[in-house]
Image (cartoon, rainbow, N blue to C red; front, top):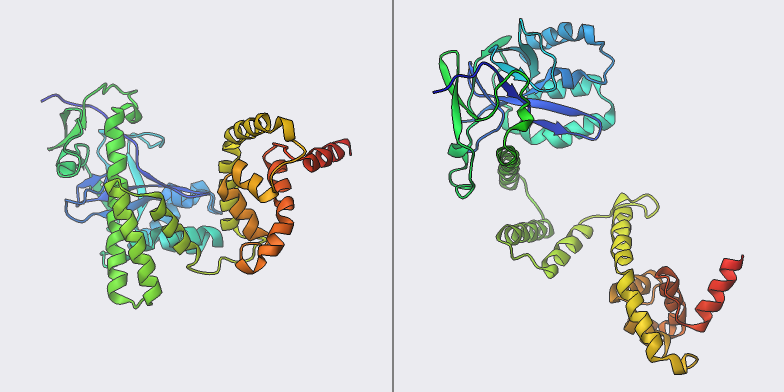
Length: 382
């Protein structure tokens, strides 16, 4: 068994739009984890106090006093780590090697006392499920002394789900009286935890996401058991779950995605067309897809021109041209946009299709009709 003088750790973190919060999992009075293995006993997530207090009105030199105030209420704790541990990206005094952490209840208390309303909402949306899972936790002790990290070998956690993956063989490092596993490699003082084998890090990240997914499913199961949903809501939930199952099994098809997207779009009124972020996102995505098709449309248009070079002044009707040369999705969008999609508007559709064709010609930078050429030249001159 080889010995290790220093173990460099990078704490996992939650990334918000304006805040990043690093965390650990407290296992018992002397042990912690950086991943929550679903096959192990429950753990307590703890959130780094320095991250909770960043970008607040509390001056850095006053942080310890405020941490101590929350610790008296059982919402925060000072964790003294073994001197063998070093933390990447954190300046921790070697003499004490201690950091302040908060329970999820403490996180909520800090958020609602110190954060903006937008940040409070982000915390509420992203951590409410954690709070529900941990709501019966006992208050934190004032301090803990942690000497054992239990999760650096992932094979026991992933034996069922990741048995096919090749893992780097761990070597044992002794911290105090306990033995933990870390992946082999350079253990000199300047070794960066982020230089551990890429596959190992990816597996750890996958394990974190898997844990979150399982927590979310557990929370949904509790909500379905305790709350009453309408028939329409249950239909939508079932549709989403069925397509998640298809996605996991690798047999998700385009029609399945279509049904799912439409169900979500119809789930509620998404607000004013002038300020809808959903419509803006859909418009951006559609525009990108249509723009990416430009080269294939140009090829089709050029082929059409070559074929009709002798009778360019005697082209087919606008509706036939649009159908032959441009993607159906573009026509569908414009027909519904212009209110020409209903059967009762067939006559109006025939009369206004030349306008629709002009829009398609201009939007795709492929001019076909004489009217398009004349208008384009006139607009460019102006």
